[in-house]
Length: 96
Image (cartoon, rainbow, N blue to C red; front, side, top):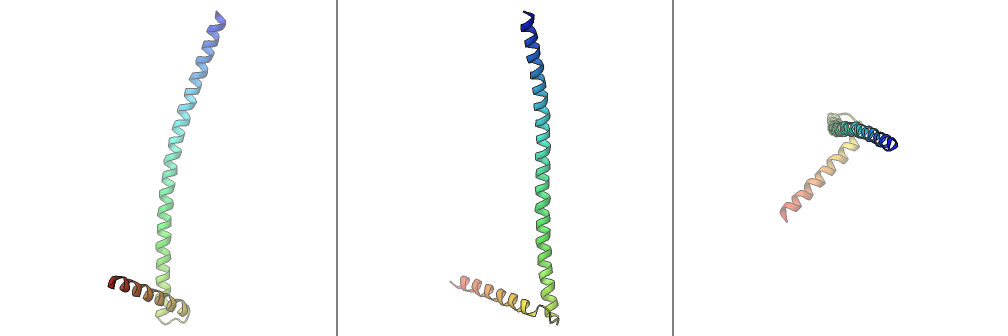
């Protein structure tokens, strides 16, 4: 009879230990998910900032070329021609 009681107590102790571990892991998982979400948000912000900086850099490059610098004149002309073609396509679509 005492053997059964000891087995029950041992089982209860193991269940308590499992529940304790479960709660700990559940809380840790929630913290990790929150951290993951925060990091995704920061990454998204950094990518947007990088994209804005690239656009600003391109505009500065074009402005420098238009300003009389002989560097990158070919790139600027190509960019302007691409923009003109894009505008022409938009005008054609509007007229249709």
